[in-house]
Length: 334
Image (cartoon, rainbow, N blue to C red; front, side):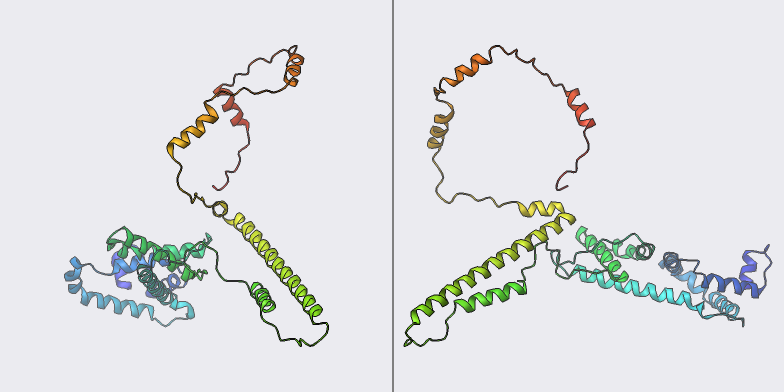
């Protein structure tokens, strides 16, 4: 390595020991990040047009490698951080494996069953992971067949980033509907109601006050069932309000969309066109004389002495000026 450095930089005087120390310092201080190491790794792989030249230069490369190993392995005092590059290479290989698994999984998963990706923070660690995975996507994107495959590759890359940094992923798919699981408290109350409505143990019909006891028992069960039903309705309304408030804080558009009532169309036969025309014509086309009574004449005579107000003409400039001075309001559901 010292001989190669002397050939490249003949004006710089440096000893073999000094050069080896500088190499170790660069390796320990992590001067090159994972993106730069990935780029150097891809540049180190010879292309198809350079295979012949690489074969001719194999003995020289072996000699250079031996010189480099001899220079690096010079007996000096070093610490345990010299294997930082090896750890980075292993980390890159693990990232590449995670990326490949995520892309294969995304290609075999339908759009509805894909997990919902969380929003990631713009931290230094997350940006470093993204920069490390970007060069790895070049091979997949160049071999992409169509737009759907490109979408699968990009989604797989985002999924790989989430898995590498340890972000939580929802495994229930991307469906936005609420869960159909019934709460435990509702199951317990419904079981009590079913038990109260079910058959009871037989009562001795020979008792003299049996009818009075049956009546009291029936009234007691009716009151309990009514109380339990009100409790279910009260808990359901409270849960609905809680979910709506939480959805309003996170996604107002989804909340307003969930509050829309479905359009209910009539179930009977459609009316005849002639009947429709006759109905609306009787309301709007035929003149009607209304008898308002004498009080209208009294009010008209009292208002005769009032000076009418001058007509107000609003121009587009007036509207623009009013809108400009008005405070901005947040659009609902935007």
